[in-house]
Each structure stands twice: as C-alpha cells, then as structure tokens.
Image (cartoon, rainbow, N blue to C red; front, side, top):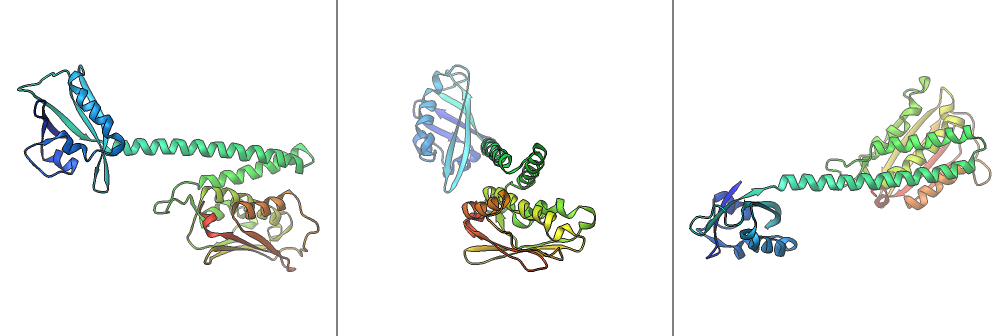
Length: 309
C-alpha cells in the first residue's frame, strides 16, 4: 500500500517511497498526473484520466483499477480515496495506491481456466456424439454397441485426465510417456497380463488435440491385441518405443509371443479406419503394419509440431 496526496489546484502529487517504486518513477518531491499517465497502459489511459478527473465529484469512497507498465513489467494498481472533497484540507486530497497485481492475475487465470474447461466440455460432447453415431453403424446389437462405445469413451476419459498444463512444458498438455502408460494400464492389470506391457519413450509434451487422437488410436490397437494378438495369450508381450527425428516422431508398436497372425483382407472395420484417419488428418502422419508370424509390428509416424497441438 502506497500513500499519495494531490493538490487539486496545482495538479501535483506527492507519494511515499513505495508509491514511486510502484509507478517506476524517480523519487521526487512532486509529480503531476501527466507524469504518471505516461506509465499507464495505453488501453486504460483514457479511462483513468476521465475517472481521476471525476473523483472530486464522486460522493463517498471510490476505487479505480488499472494497469501500469514499468519497463517490461505490467502491474495492476487500485487507486482508492474519498470523493466529493471529503476530508480535503488546504486543497489537498489524500488516498492510497494498492498493488493488486496478484489478485488480478488470479482472476485472469480463473477466467482462462473457465473458458478452457468450457471449450473442452464442448469438444468432448461433440466427440461423444460422433462416436455414438459411427459406433451404431459398425455394430449389430445394442449390447455390442454399448460395450464398444463405453470402451472408447473410457479411453478418452483416461487421456483427458492427463490433459493439463505441465510445469515448464511450454504449453503442452501431457507427457507422451505418461499418456501411453495410462491408456495401456487397464490391459496390463488383467491378472496374468501384469508386467507384460513395456513403454519406452523420450520426454516430450503432447497437446490436447493430439492426446485425444492418440487415445483413440492406442485404444483400437490395444483392443485388437487383446482379442487377436499378443495380449490374448499368457506368453505374449507388448513393447511401445518412440524416437524423435528432425520433423517426425516415430512410435513402434511391437507384439511378440502371440498366436500366428496374417495380414487382414479388405479395407478393415471401423476401428482400422478410425486409426488411419486419426493418424493422417489429426497428426499429419501414417501407420504401417508388418505381419511376422510371432505378432504384429505397427509403425506410427507423426509430425512433431502436430503432436504438440
């Protein structure tokens, strides 16, 4: 809290040492309002000038919040006092400047968080609606539809549990290794399956949109492995590794020890189309399968900049 006094005739202000420091001006005996107004944020300057000139006509207490710029630093100040010449002695008005930067930053953060949550909820509702429609077309019974839709939505939910800012993560929403581990955890905790899934990826961030796409892709791959591949037998294992190249991120999905597999015929079902579409449209990449007799190897290639969005 800084103290100030204003001579309404000479337009001179005197502040204590804290006041001069708050405004970033040299300590002098007096400054005028125009000296201080040069430090007011351009977007607030006209509003503050009008409000400051009107303070003498305000009946009772007044409060004006505005931003000031001190070099590259932006601070919030709350100017408070009594209007209508109340308490004026010898043509001098008095008041205080409060540094409310912390409170304003907290309010802005809360508004940003509320907007982000609203945006995410709308996105999830849109995705849920689309998944419901396309799942209904790819299943034959209501029981099968309910099961597949629940699995896909649960996978999305696990991914979005990780979608939050990482300290020092440059705006990324989740860590790739954490995202994959959480998505595959349900398949690794099924009794004898425990410990048979290994994830080895470098530390890198994943954005919200990419996390949603990867959740669907990994869910489809893991479900197929559980039905037909390495995770369908006790001896099977799954390794997921990842390398970062110049412009690309390459993920290798390797299944071993499963039943003999052969390349599927035809275009594949909804899950295969979902994986292919997600990799190309959302991540700017591709997925290629190899079919050795011991299990499938899937190579997922993604653009590095898309992975961070």
